[in-house]
Image (cartoon, rainbow, N blue to C red):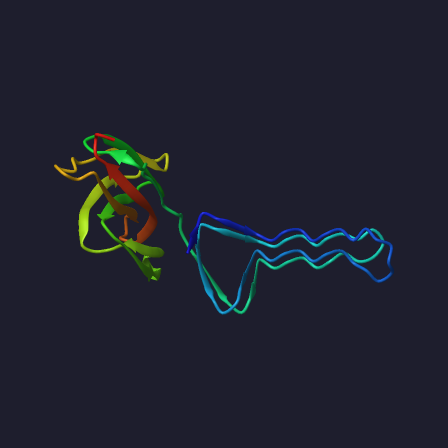
Amino acid sequence: MRRGSTFEGGAGGRGDDFVPGMHGGDGGDGIRLASAQAQLLDSQLASGAAGPHCCGWPGLPGQPSAGSGTVNVLSGQRSALRFPSPLRESTTAQISVEGTPGDLAYLYLSRSSAFQYMPSWKGVWLTASPYVRRLQLGVIPPSGTLATDYAIPDLGPGNASAGGFVQTLRVNAVGNVTLGNVCAVTILDSIY
């Protein structure tokens, strides 16, 4: 699963020799899959240009996608979470979620990770149940970035650190869900 990415094949090499019958190099494919699947959201595929030849034929251009695999292009805009780490206990961190204006953003916190592809939610669920917290962050403003402060809890006596995973999801006005990326987070005791 890739979000907000560009897959572009490289340009073919120049054929600058004078050997008869030679040609420029072939352009690279944007993505080549062998018996695999790629799920793309808010991403672009581009072929590499054919390489020129000084006195013969140019190479062939690449293809946006090639091979025996399947490329599934999902509609919509990606969601990007920015969550700093490491953090100190009993402080505040500024986090942000980028996405479609008007969508409602949620944050899920878990002590462990998971991996479950959810095509109807346009992503991969990467945090495992039980959840430490589930928070409604707010509505993404017209700028496309929702910034908010998040209170980092006290770890309690005898705990030097804690770790976990946070992931966003967005819900639009008609109830469609888009999963965001996951961030690994480490919280340190204030003595560090």
